[in-house]
Length: 57
Length: 563
Image (cartoon, rainbow over all chains, first blue to last red):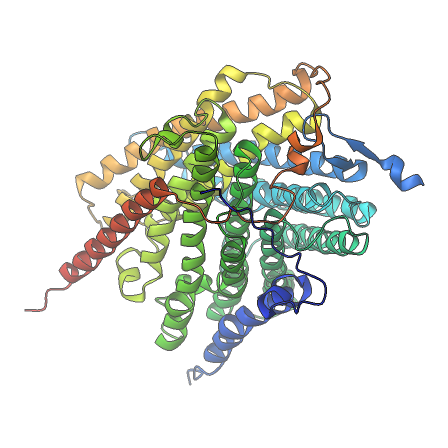
């Protein structure tokens, strides 16, 4: 079978661009996600846990 | 227009190269290699000190060398080379001008001055706080200042990369989506921005504490935020070297990814989840909850591991597909047997893929499980793991790229092509064995940073099994072999720049034959393919992974008897 070469990202004019492609083609949206997710799940959550350790009397 | 005069067309590849970007790529790459040499010498001194029979340095010099080694190779060599990759993956691959080249020079000078300041602070002997610089150990203020300047420079380079993407889009120098290699570089840049921001959050107050303006820094708070920089900086490497894998597959074989969508999704998993692996350094901290530790190191991180496994399948799969298209179809592995094993760009790339997966990847997932981590936490297993990722994964991939990139950019023949054929094997196998022996010694309990495992001057003695001493000796021998490989690389690169023969102008190639028109510079998938060899290799990897995981759970069960 002749192997098909697939081009991504082009698309016919007027055809709606899939949501995932919109995400993956927008570097600033990716930057926002790449900063926000680890900041919330790692830094903020971690800092809150450390800050809530009772101080020794 | 003046801008058009600032481009040259590469006779080898057909790329239209922006001259200011060309210069910046060269300077960043050369500086990277110089720091690899400096850091490598310190690394060899560390390995020879930890070899009990040799025990090269006294304690003070050992911790000084360990600090310099960590900084120069984990941070300076890697980030300088990554900046070169960012400029290459944006300006060269997208064939557009680099955004604000003058700012690129500001970034370069800040990084260089920062690296020199920190090196001087370490070499002075009053800042032997190691790469982690855990408080309350206090280094001289210039130690922190140098790292901050270096980080600001690297941050500027990331913004230049993003600016160049905007220019390429506005000037329509590419169609559709950016190429996959550029997308991987974007992933590295995003992780770098998070890393540097986290570094600023913790290192600026630590600098002020070192100067005396801040009274104290909470040790656990420091560790949480510092590791958002310290470990994420190594995740920049992972994203960058996987982009290099895709680039080399495209350059050497004309290989297209099996599925661009899947590969891009794998990079997206990195963007979202890779940085949080930092939490595995905190798995024994009593102040943090199990929910926090397990979410960050297991549940969410496994999504990033899935990304790595996708890349581990699609990169060799793309090579197999390209080879089979050329008629290398006999049996399962003719495509692999007849690969150009004498070309250092390929052998370095192939060893990097295999050893990153088997050594760095598997051990990293094992360490990330909270229960298993207790067996090896803070032992020599940890450096064993990251020598499996940063050295035989990232450094070897960067060396492989350099074998292609340096002759192309400078238009010179390799200085010692015969030695270059052996170099990836010497360096890769030497450092791969060093990684294995360190992990072996760590499993036997050898601590990661101790100058003398015989504890000769300690009040309370501890005797490690004889096998641990054997492992440390073998680690020293392996590091020597790897060191020779590293020295040959540096010699070859410097020799090529200074003494390499000028390349003869090649006959003009038809446009479709050039690298610039190939899969490295455009988006697109290979389509419906059959890659049985790659799937067989992937199954061997999975079986090894499962067995190693099981062996460690079994080992953990033996640590504390239940009856």
